[in-house]
Image (cartoon, rainbow, N blue to C red; front, side):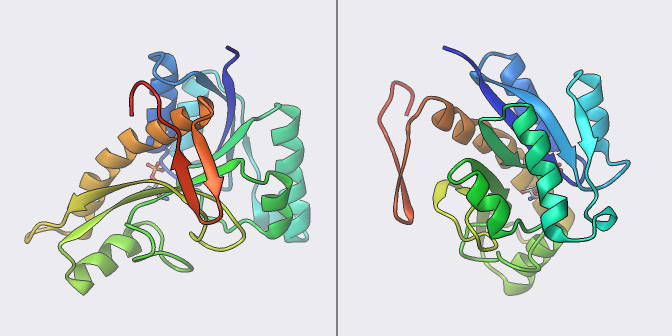
Length: 212
Ligand code: GRF
């Protein structure tokens, strides 16, 4: 079976990128990261790509006259590396219908809460965990979903709960959630790679296999 070709889009530290690379290298994932694109210069995710000899590019939206021109450059790169699945890993841009329709059903995102709570426009990074603590919920978690035209609105693939502890700060909670992200994202990508995800409207059915 040929390996699934992953294109990973990042904007930050890239610990999820690292986890995906590690799960490819260990043989858990029948996949390889063939390209990394960052929306920002100088982020640590680029360093991680370099260390693993993965071609990486900075495509900074601020250097393009329009959002379409910006996304066209990413589309060109992703197509030239023959990417099968686009994985958003801490990527801080909302993709337009133009981009989403180009790769219909082939873009995944991870969000550090149990969607539909604490998600959508403005809920990113530490803001999510701060909102969780401000609200006082006892359980938060992680969601992996397909990307559609909205912000965090696409069909949900996997979710996992993470407890909120009394003495949590946004930092300690983010750390606990991140540990779960590093497990669940490879799981979701593996299910995709094995052809076990079936989208039916808003819901994603997981076709039974040996491991789940
Ligand atoms: C993660 O919490 C992810 O869910 C969110 O941004 C963070 C990225 O972390 N979308 P990293 O860059 O993968 O370390």
